Image (cartoon, rainbow, N blue to C red; front, side):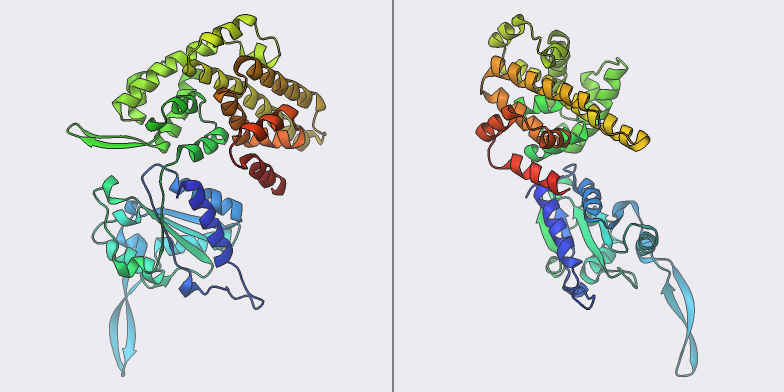
Length: 417
């Protein structure tokens, strides 16, 4: 399944595992609450969704990348205690509470909830000395002699062996005690996330043209070449910062984040075109309803890559306007107790209608309109705005062009929030 489906499955699990009967007992006893084991390629967002799940479920989160720790942090440090057996005193080795279990108790005392998720990443890449401890953890829900507290759900994550030479295969005994979920990279799901995460719009524009460049793992005589969702997101932050300071973004810089020469070369070339389109297409005029006629003439002759870039630029201008409006109104309400300004909403509504008019005149109901409507639907700020200021043109094209019921699902989710 993709990362979005895995997220929902874990949320469902949290809901069921933490459900209690009339006597306050968990309906599924702890011994039957199997840990979840996420297995998927690196950089698809396994770690990130855990923070989202904990926040959305209103529970605490303790997260560890286990390869960064030693057996002592997992099991605890040994010390000598004395016990009496049959009248004789013996020295016995015991262990202090492990760092991981102690962190859970700290979270229970200080966190938003005494229930939560214990997330252990890279669990199948541990050292030989720590491997037995991890098997014991998954099988018995303990670290050393300390059990994971009641009300804490175990989620572990690891990479398939083809991505990491350090991977250790789990035996059947362990696999028979966990819920194993295999995750695959999914560009469509990442695009939904990217819209809200502020990913530079040149990246989804490029990936619409080259979806095969979204996630790559290759090995040849020159070594390993790869591209991950994490790489695209991290590079996006650098790209935005570099452009704000007018620092050139070279192919070599791109390669540092996306170490695949074809992808780095391809995106570097596209970024030059995208920057040129930013200068040559008057997005402010388009959103004001003053699009020069020469723009329509140019787009009639333009290639699909240029047309997609223009759609992304219009989306960027519109999304930024709506997001800025929401942030301004929120601050006004919090600091001054004022009601949201209607003038800003009217300006955004007009810009939205101007954008749709431009899209109709330039592209009709082609693929570009599908990209535009999908982009609006994927962005939470835009959907919140549309929930309060419904656009007839948005309704028309979303019903006519969008596949499935994504628009309805998003509006329902927001209405329930």
